[in-house]
Image 1 (cartoon, rainbow, N blue to C red):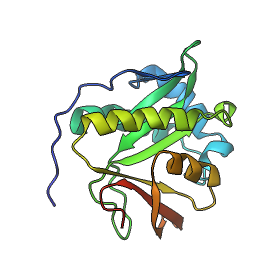
Image 2 (image 1 turned 90 degrees about the vertical axis):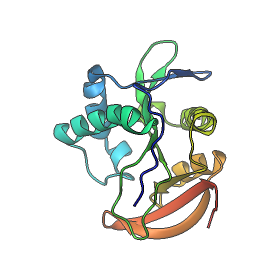
Image 3 (image 1 turned 60 degrees about the vertical axis):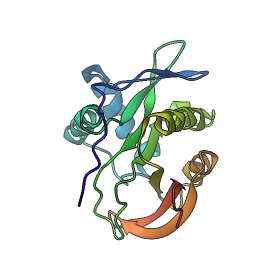
Image 4 (image 1 turned 180 degrees about the vertical axis):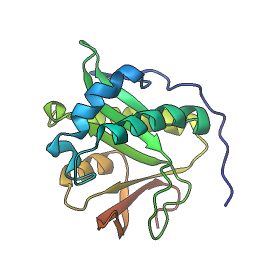
Amino acid sequence: MTIKRISALVTAPDIETERTRLRAHRLEDFEPMVAMWQDEVIYRHILGRPSTGSETWSRLLRYIGHWSALGFGYWVIEERQTGLYLGEAGFADFRRDMDPPLGQAPEAGWALVSSAHGRGLATEVMLAAHAWMDAHNLHDQTVCILSPEHRISRHVAEKCGYHHAYDTTFAGGPTSVMKRGGNLS
């Protein structure tokens, strides 16, 4: 397998949307991340269980490392007016053990604290993230995986240009793979 090397950034660039700021993860984000990943509203469609502190710490370091290794990654989502932590969103290469494999297309993802749900923030943030990815990346396709039951995330993905590609199993549960750009088959 050949790994496509992208001119890497040292850290995530800042992006502002109407209501949010996307910025690089910092070590100070650990506590709000732990709280979010232990909220059942957040994890039920993603992990199916709360993340431990150790898993969240690894997630934080993985997010920071994506930018320097691959030139893309996840951002912290902050409320523009207050700086309040609202979640995280972006792109990753998690090398998921899936059949069929996702390949080298960056995988889009988003998770917002439950108090931020229902306001259209996920769509706002992901449209901005995709605009950045489209302008700065060599990949002509991105993918996302979702629980088939998570209709709200499917709606966000569709608003960002994703189309259902196929269904599979991941981490013991049914998973829908959606693709944006490139060959949609």
